[in-house]
Figure (cartoon, rainbow, N blue to C red):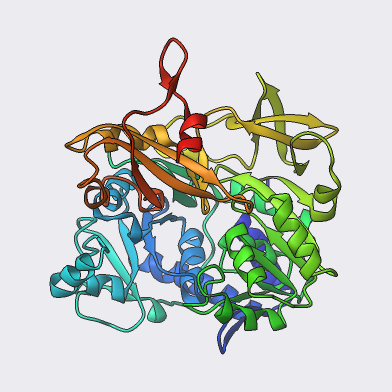
Length: 484
């Protein structure tokens, strides 16, 4: 079974002098990357990290942050990705479930999560946790310059290095990623080095990264397989958000061979009239629909397209060539050929997947298979989707299960009933609309901290009643979508 870290370090040994990662004017060669990973692992071990220790991780993608994540895994630890934008209550609930012994955060987060700066942040709608106290007795690592609020005795990331030591054996955990959930019931996916290695090896093989080519992305799950293949991973600088600020991102494409983008970000780049000589565009994180593919083909006629279908629990499940996807004229959404390491079956119309790349859920029994919630059929190893078998819609890169949040929202004083619905657009994203029966005047102010920040509605509407259907008077989401 592939080990993601071993595969990466093998790539470092093959071409130690070749560029591995670049951010701005700073580049690490493959040899320097290997030394940094080993050096951080040795330093963490010297500081007391034990195999199985978890690290709450709030460091933006960058050379030092990626090396810290990989060095932690090399020391036998587990990275727990924690989004500070989720709100303090959600952040504390997730930290409580993960029970980390280490916290890694940017110095700015320590500074603005205490005292006057915290009050200022809250006045602007940013509810940050107190990074000094969110995990009692934690060891702290900070990135960036020292700022007031950084705990006494915290380790500076840039200075975290020791003579290289041996990498630990693969453990049962390497990465924890929180998904949709509430403060009462946070949910997280757990991956091992082996499950990550299996999925990303499949991904790299199917995409066909070329040694030395430039891959532009801030996504770990794309950058790591690119490194394993010997490519040159270039990270966009802070503030160069292709979705929010495409004009700042466009100049980066001039030197790129491969671009990864979620549909909403790619839509923004195309709207800004992107013109680039790319070998390949990778699209994932949300449904990839025909209108977007047609625009890519029209504006980037010589560029290959790969549409990625997967989920946090197992990535990828299938990958489709863009031209094959456009040529498909059957019923449903063709999402590509199943990956070699993925086993799939159809149960009562629903796609069920399994394989060595399948992760599990934190605090639950290991998964043997995953019900995807997608209605599908499989024809000759090709997967065609036909809608959802359960209530779920997509907001950005987040799968939103409304049943998790509606009871919480309905508990707000003055609210008699609440329902969330996604109104899809032609790039596979959903506008999130909250329908309220009752007094909605206090709802918007009450939502931060009650629900995940990624699920905050785009609009709130008030109705006299929610539409229902059948003898059971079940909520009719299709009718509600039409109403809003």
